[in-house]
Amino acid sequence: MRFALALFVAGAAMAQKIDVAKLGPQVGAAIPEFSLQDQFGKTQTRESILGPKGAMLVFVRSADW
Image (tube, rainbow, N blue to C red):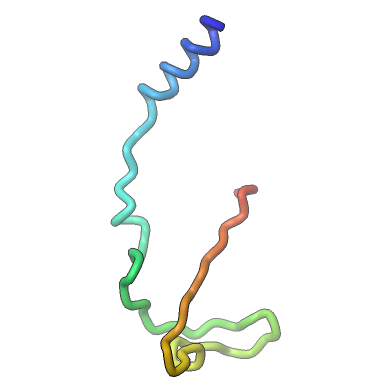
């Protein structure tokens, strides 16, 4: 038990605070212009995905990275 606690304390001391503002667009920020292919090979742009009420983009990153 002491060994596990020592590893936890050592790991916590080495953890660095991450400035999420530097990681990319933030919640609610306008997205930049883009042009990407979807899963069907059709080119999508910011304008092509916007509907009358706007759009919601959700990015999912696998846990295996």
